[in-house]
Amino acid sequence: MTTDAYVGLGSNLDDPAIQLARAVSELAGLPGTTLVAQSPFYASRPVGPQDQPDFVNGAVWLRTRLPAHELLDHLQAIEHAHGRERLRHWGPRTLDLDLLLYGQESIRDPRLTVPHAELPNRDFVLQPLLDLNPGLTLPDGQSVARLRTLCADNQLRKLPPKAGT
Image 1 (cartoon, helix red, strand yellow):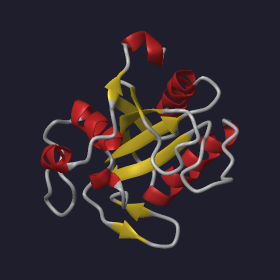
Image 2 (cartoon, helix red, strand yellow):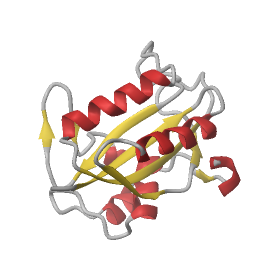
Image 3 (cartoon, helix red, strand yellow):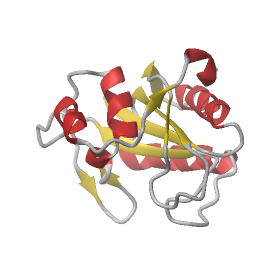
């Protein structure tokens, strides 16, 4: 059985657009997984501490046979391979991969919350999801398009395609 999973990508260190482009390639190579689509990349102000560079964000739509927690393990291994260090909450990072949605499942345990808890509050997550699938809904039936209209502006700026290659 395959599940549609949506993964958010973010970086603000060590050439962020290149970090994201490499991560997309690595995600496409996960076992039992197919890359359905990749969103454009966007730049935005950091959430939390403002004494750091702007972020580059995007999202991918995967079709996977991996269970949610196994997919999370792979995401964390890719982050680690990119030099991810968790030094400060909402601090700078080389790569952040978040499992945003996993089919229509709701998961809440000590390791994983899906849908991602902050998804409704992040234009840099909602807009890439809309780019991937304009009709996307959360497990509770909320429309991602509606959430986007209600979301605070974080000075989201779409980057030209060459920035993501």
